Image (cartoon, rainbow, N blue to C red):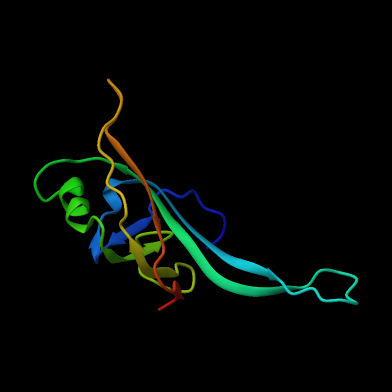
Length: 134
């Protein structure tokens, strides 16, 4: 896949495809850098530490029964799975999937008068993230 516009992303939470409710999604992964510089070194040395990250999603809200708000509220304060892909096409070498678990540690409600009902969340990762092409 060459350069493309991000218009058909795939987002599943707890094995439920919720892509049609997603305005934006970002998976951020960070590895801690531990300073392992010792006497005699003339440059700092870094040792990889524990990895962490977040899954940030901006949702277009829907409060109907069995819709977005109902699904996410049921997951509040639990650890659940996620899967994201660049497109909704099948997983492959040009459309890898990223999977893992997140702690659903927030459930925002509200908005401004006249604005589109939205939920913006940032869930911390819980455990390893994997990338697969099949």
